[in-house]
Amino acid sequence: MKIGDLSRRTGVSIRMLRYYEEEGLLTPQRRDSGYRDYGPQEEESVKFIKILGATGMTLPTIAKFLPCTLKDRPSFEPCHELIDTLQDQIEATDGNINKLMEGKKLLENILSDLKRTIK
Amino acid sequence: MKIGDLSRRTGVSIRMLRYYEEEGLLTPQRRDSGYRDYGPQEEESVKFIKILGATGMTLPTIAKFLPCTLKDRPSFEPCHELIDTLQDQIEATDGNINKLMEGKKLLENILSDLKRTIK
DNA sequence: ATAAGGTCTGACAGCGCTGTAAGAGTCAAG
DNA sequence: CTTGACTCTTACAGCGCTGTCAGACCTTAT
Image (cartoon, rainbow over all chains, first blue to last red):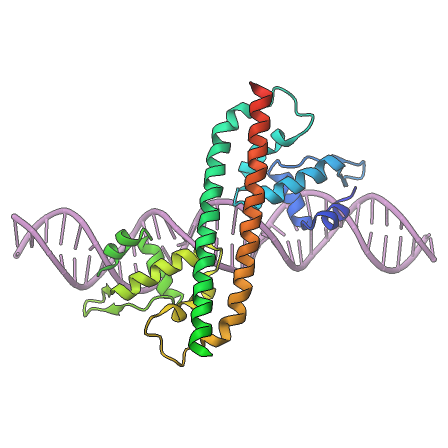
């Protein structure tokens, strides 16, 4: 699959797909022409990247976790060293969720205040 | 209250407090010396800014909402024009919360996978 | 073979936010 | 009055991400 196809399928811009590679998150095959050739494995990875990125995780951090999401992950992947980081990240995400909910509450308060004041 | 005091009380860096002013979010009094002089009203605003900022709202956007959070808000404040934006923002925040929860779930899956694989 | 559209690399620029530094002035305690 | 801590403005720089552009090459269909 060429980069444009993957971009269309994932909604991630071509620019960013190349950036992912630059940051070590993806390493697609190359054709003789130099064109990147993505497989279903890479498409799967992009999905993970999107989700993890949405949690505020930075790309280098995501790069650390990505090998652990592989089905056929080689056993020597140092995933066990990531458990602490992982736990921290879960906590951080939880904190962010709470902040967002607090923010949402505030917004809703402002909204209902406004509606009451104006109507 | 001087800027250092407000910084300590809110946990927002001096740099950022000045930046808030630059962006029109705060307009503290000035002493003859030129020193900024913050009142309790400004401290309250900083709290809102922090919360709204945590929802991913950008400072210029926050600047629009801030007048609507004032207790003694002048009636001519065009807050009614913000209702749509506000509703959009609430929706967006909701979406972000969901994304974060999805991300958290993924992280937890990775974590339990790892624990099972390793132990 | 030609044309249109896809892709390559490399570079530059912008966003929003944040820190830091320099050089000058202010404040408060001794 | 001196000294150390604080504040002022201005400016530069970095982060992580993202877009865009240029110039060259590849691919596919006609």
